[in-house]
Length: 352
Image (cartoon, rainbow, N blue to C red; front, side, top):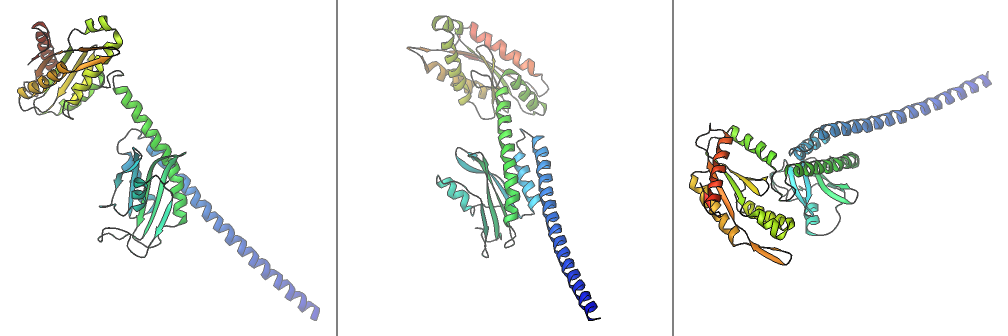
């Protein structure tokens, strides 16, 4: 009977050992499943973000969207997004009143050192604003290869809320965001290029009219259309060549653009003609004196090309809207008539 008891105890011990082993394996497997679920959730989030941002390429609000995504995904209290401009990190979106405590960003902007991932947990308040409590933060640079495109700073008011797992998630997100930001930048460059005249850099004719029509839809105030034509432009081309003519057109376009208000719209209308839309003018005389000022600058400007230099003049016609119901083409027609009056009465003058 003794041997049976010993056999029973051995079987019991073996069973308990196997049971413990099985429980440990199950616990390990469950932990792996949880970890895989987290990774799957992260991949799903990245796919969703990718779809969401790619649908909004060219949208100026995409950075604000990225900031909202950071807050939603990570459950952080504060999020800030910086974009690199002229080798400096410029704040583009934040829900903080003050970001003075973003010392890593300040250090980067004040030196040539590389921006690295940084996790900060502090019992003391990190914020420079005593009314805001921040005790946990991650600085996450957004790199595409070796190029720094921007940075994300996420922060929480709970000490040690952010950890290495959040860094892993942010790293994956930042890699994706780098592609999104680059794609958005390329999209905007292509879009901008399609709206500009290749020679002068002014808006092209079709984009000019699309902007003006939108502005005029709800416009309540008088506006002016100005037609500008370079005098004797054909003679300039015939005498000095078309490349010299191109230089003249670029110089004149630059003078016109730089001497208008920011809200004025200027476009190459065709050939050597430039068209300007001046919205919200209190008096027709304002448009006249502004264009007379520009005419005088052009008259005094010496344009150099290779070994030659020349002065050119412009004739300018102005049409001012009579009321908000008047059709745009009528105002353009009036400006065109005044332009021809300026050309036929000796050139180098403004007629309104």
